[in-house]
Image (cartoon, rainbow, N blue to C red; front, side, top):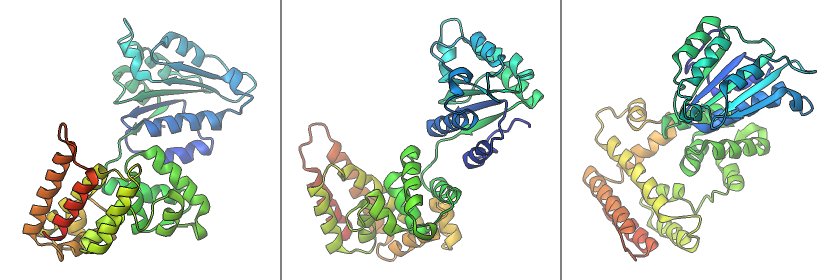
Length: 348
């Protein structure tokens, strides 16, 4: 099978490995470590039983790995097992060893004719593996795959990832639930997937709902930044102040800097919507970078409560609050600043 770049998804490759359909060589590279760690462990767990690992699993680390020794391990046949698995973790550190700058190129000769019973996994974090001989040898021999582990961006990419992962677990998830997970967990993929794994086991009829998220993930429906955003979008002063009071009583889980950051992102998007020429749902979704129609409508609704001048002033209030809370030697109470900010937003 030919080498592929960025054309195979994490979900698709996961399903392939779970079926026991292995490539001879995997290069797992990129800036998102979660996918790399998850895939290499899945290969080990699927290809070898616990008993088989003593003789058929070889682990190497880039800070002290000798590529020639790794290749030698790859050329050994498995003992009482169908596969031998050889994993090079932190391969990006190989080039940092004195005198080992181009040692990754040595894998090229092995890639031209790999041992069919061996599964070689090279984990290269923080960027792309820089070895043209190796990548060309993989392409020529059709012996492996290059998986690109990209960082997930907030907005459309994150929403899509949440929906896709929920579907891979056999679950459905609605727009509000998707936004709640995106807003409160963000791009911490390890935590996000862990929480979603838990939600999938508890979901009635395989539906991940906002109520289930509140009960399971620990996001309180009434007292969180998501609800503060909702309250301010509707100019619901009573609820907004009640939420800030709750934050003040529970500062450990509700730092004001997170609230200010989320409100800045929200009102910046509302300002984009207010000044957009294309007011259609599709146009708004493209402008703010979301695939959630529910989210787009929320921004549109907010523009009915705040005019353009008010929104420009609000952005200024948010910047001012952020600067004052982070100022050198500042002794101002962060929740006093947050209450002042909320007052200014409501009266903008």
